[in-house]
Image (cartoon, rainbow, N blue to C red):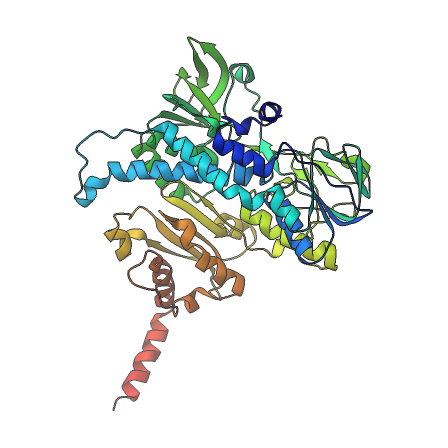
Length: 511
């Protein structure tokens, strides 16, 4: 059975003790599906973040819940996304810190050696250790009926899984998304890596081509370069992280180059062939055509929704190439069926999936009217430095006819960043010019993802940037950049007329 599961789910390779532990938790080979109840209050297809939160939350409120998963419980985040990638990035950051230790008067006399198999073993061990939280056994203990297998809608009110029929009052589609197949001639035949199998590597590729300069591509390109691979990052557009602030993208570009990544923008890949045990990419770049031969190719661009096999037509659920179609309440055309997470959202983030799942619980089970458009969703690209963003970009505000006032504070003006030698970065806060309401922010810093939440909270609570200045921050911290931005904004409000008025008040109130 273990061999069959391994063949079916390649992300479980190699089948060492850690992946066996993972398998035992999130796709137990000996699992016996329960006898279905006559009708479930909530049936959930997909046990990624959105599905797990829906199932646990509903069961905790007393609902009868069925949870269906055909692959690995925990979804992308646990198995092939957030968890393994951040374990890899942390190891890569340790390598970088050792190499840069001379900046702090701690020079490394000997050459640095990376034990890549040990790096990947640590990754698998940590992933296995965390998998118990998403395990089939844990969810059964929560009162959820867990079904391992492929579920498909039979009609508008029932789901088939094997020989079982699960009837439901309400249902949630939470089947997520997967890496896209790029239509490059020869790529499929030559073979390539995605986030779904790159963490199975046990040997470091000497030469690695990464296709895609978005978050996944930039994160993994930098990590593998720091771990000792020669990395070539290929991007079709003019800049890395094309959706992000241009200044932020430029800082990431510079950091990747410092780490040895060779960046090629505005390049098209015409074809891929195998030669001398290498994978050769025919490139068409602005200057000239060229060929790049590497040991592995990693695809770091694009996601496709997992709608295949669900028989959505029978359920009366609409979908397109972007995924399942939902309204602002996350309800599909079938008013009994909702969708949450990557399958239905442009925000392909674990934290966004969790937030949407909470909306589904409220709206599906308690006739709520919570709107997904009311969410304030931050995100972070975990390069070094990290790029974190929340809210509007200036171009988006301009399209909406909103006049912005932008405050920018470079990290080189923050004492703790100077002391840490981590001055690469900045904070930009975009506020409504007439009120100081925070509408968006971009933060570039080594720990930007940890620091952004204060701004997200202020936006969610309707706290103006000027008011943030009254928050006392411990000194010295890098998060003080937020208070400095608030102070800078308040200083701008001291117009010559206001200064004149304050001067008059001071003169007339002297003792």
